[in-house]
Image 1: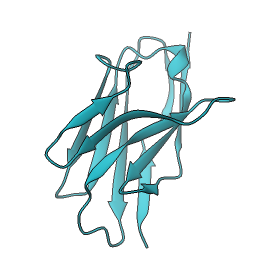
Image 2: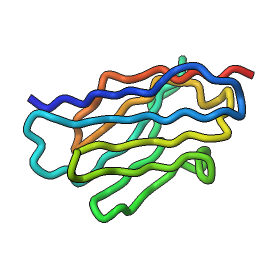
Image 3: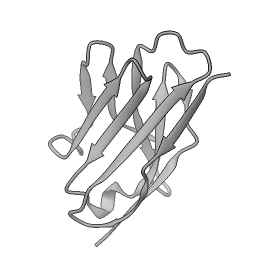
Length: 111
């Protein structure tokens, strides 16, 4: 059974940084797409960043220049380095890999 385990969420003041990590295990032989979505209270889940095999990355306009996604194919992990965080980045962040979802990790940015 595929499992995605996220870590690195927490609380930070505006302007600060956090790094999220996600490790996939349980039978994923080859992961084409990994990434991060987020869902803020009262809002729909939205894509934050994705990275495909070959390191082709996509970023939502709201995070371009502030967030960086990276992956380690050998370890089936994906990371999201978040800098210059804003209160509007507050949300539950979900890792995705080939259609599988993690349980989510809370990121809270205070002003």
